[in-house]
Image (cartoon, rainbow, N blue to C red):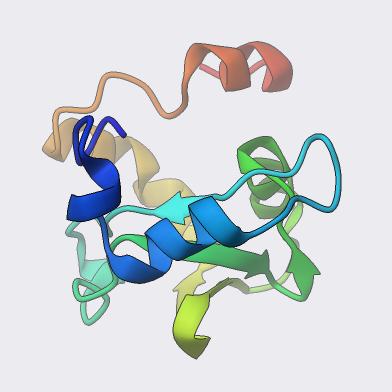
Length: 126
């Protein structure tokens, strides 16, 4: 609702509204996780068209909620981070380079911290 306002069901992308209204959670902690935009950086060139899409899985593991997506991303030990999105879209980043670029991307886009306070508290990160 924060991005589209109180009239979000009329302003948000149709597939997003359909998922939010018609889908049923399989567990109490299941949530829709959305990629609202890809922040500009040399590592993300070519992915700027991906916006307002549901994150389905990180690697081969289905995402339950935002905390779970964060944990899966942090646990990735391979050379690539693979984010499977709705409509069979995929975002693949070089893992080490993406982690190294995080601070630079945050500063470039005026974002004060990497994650929300509840996720910082859980992970011990800043």
